[in-house]
Image 1 (tube, helix red, strand yellow):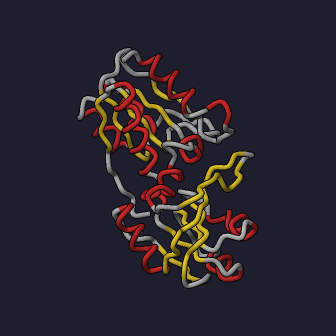
Image 2 (cartoon, helix red, strand yellow):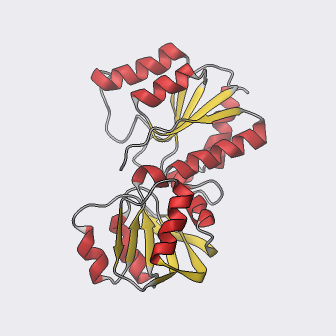
Length: 251
């Protein structure tokens, strides 16, 4: 497939122009004109770049790209990453918030689907865009059962669970990655359980004082879902060969 046509399709399908983001979303490193194999990964790092090149991919699509709001010099690790892609004939495409928020292949749409939430709707405003999803568990799930469903879904246990809410989860919000600071929106919406990615010390009391169940399922784990779903979409629509590069961080 022609790279320009694929990139144009991705830009439109993922609604890049509509979503404000600190990530410089879209094509970040130009690769070959023709694309037959596309690799997918969560992070831009030397390991994923080396694996994509070794697999013969002409394009790597990631959630966390190389280029953000601040310019970076092409020195040290950053230079080695870019050199690996260029010398290996592999381009790089990034989709950060657009892949969190997408209603079909987004991280949070996938998380809500895999948790079997009902009446799912967009939730959680960030930079003017609703990036998460919320819905109902019917029947409700006791917190240990919800954790079991997450382990089955993500293949890894949560990083931390703060069970400060009701014994059964009923009204659930999902925002992947680093979104613990959005607990105020969870409380304001009358939800009782929040599934997000990563945490730190300060959020213990935030959850306790709001009487919320908060499951920190892992930044990496919750953001594998979107790139996998996008890979399936491109396979079905264009017949492209795809592969997922699993480089977990434990975070």
